[in-house]
Amino acid sequence: MLGSMHSESWDMDPKHLGFVLARYKFVSKMLVGKKRVLEIGCGDTTGSRIVKSTVEHLEGIDIDADRMASSPSKGTKWEIPTKVWNVLDGPLPSNFDAIYSLDVMEHIPPEYETMFLRHIKYMLRDNGVLIIGMPSLESQVYASEGSKAHHVNCKSEDGLRLILKQYFVNVFMFGLNDETLHTGFGPFCNYRLAVCC
Image (cartoon, rainbow, N blue to C red; front, side):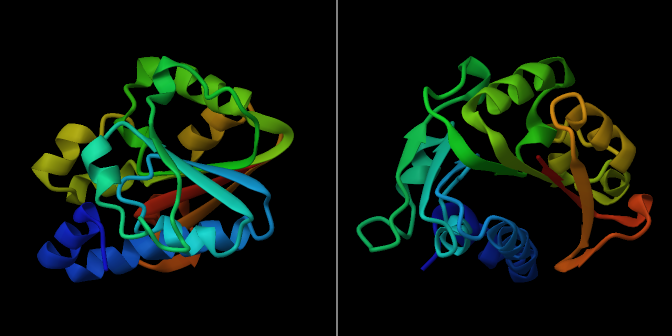
């Protein structure tokens, strides 16, 4: 069973769902054994289920209550607690061992990205891990007009590293082309994943 957002993806372009779930698998492998984890932009939590199976506690926040309400994990042993929350309004009053955010930062206007990252850093423990995933700037030439209209802050590999290094000592960059993970030439990546600690 899929939530509303991923059901739509399955209906329109099923291979895209495979690409999205590969991102969640990467996060799940990076965060194995973490005690308290937060997903920013959890949507319908379909992909979150993959991460939930490798961490002790996972919760999600999103600004779309309707999407969260369609979560396929509701009422199951895999239920993921969710809350309507906009990170730009302020950090949650708790500390997490890890935070991840897939397909969110490209929607944050550049003038608000500093606030976005400061609030995330505030919610992380001192030795916490952040994973950010977003479409690459270079991929936008192939994006649909609808996608381009909402992707206001895609970044090159160097651009994403530069902003994240302002908040984290270590920033490790990975690329995804469809579901294939690599550390190849940055401009050839369709999707970027940054692991920060």
